[in-house]
Image 1 (spheres, protein in one colour):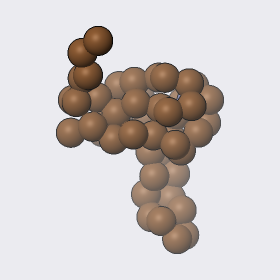
Image 2: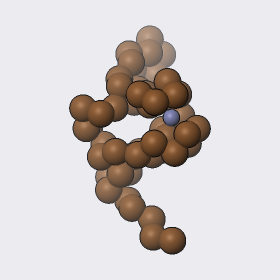
Image 3: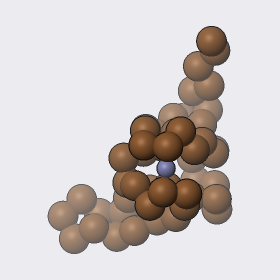
Image 4: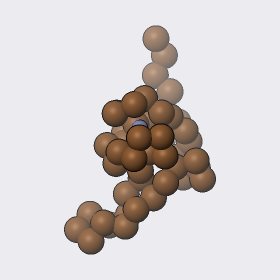
Length: 50
Ligand SMILES: [Zn+2]
């Protein structure tokens, strides 16, 4: 199974898209700053690729 390091992936539901893609939601956390949020499940547990 190949690992696509050019994609960010949601660890909760498996959604993946290019990092910085408009397909991702973004939230501003007062502590952590800007976070990528999964548009499918709303989780911010996203593994960022490069
Ligand atoms: Zn998700």
